[in-house]
Image (cartoon, rainbow, N blue to C red; front, side, top):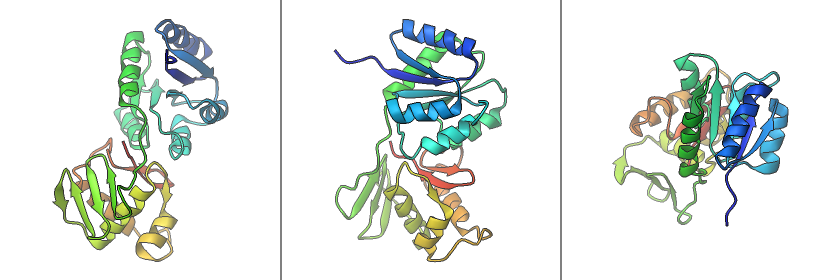
Length: 232
């Protein structure tokens, strides 16, 4: 008999976390609670939970920073909890790597339903080449020999720079690729802090991938750090 899903709650409000933990355990989940970001980060590495639930406003590290720091190595779903009633905050969180956002006060059965939906989706898978000439992820395929890209089997007209950029990000799917690396790999120059050509290319790629409105499905902006290709 397989073990029930393991959930990690990172929440500094001990009373609220205790209520969530009690409810979720009564619904058959295994639950670990950590009261701050540092302890939560350590727990993610040590227990690799099936799903992490992270409060946005923690006393030491905010939820978005935690998400950004683990996304390259932790591929299971992450849910954000927030007491702030701001749509743009939710958009920013989803754009930075969260899989779902839930506003407080949390209704227990809505929480359970959202958790189950994320668990059904399962962990993201790294992009794996079918051979050394192709990259595939979701409904996107790159033919590295022919220098061609296809979305849902439809040919995409990409510039040379866009193709190189997409290839670089897909080859490192699930990992944040910083701007310095992208400029070196894609353009062969050092990033001077002013050039916006990579950002412009990402914007154009999103349009061609029909993914130019957040939450982005393929290319996520990791604020102040770089970009990440999401593989599912």
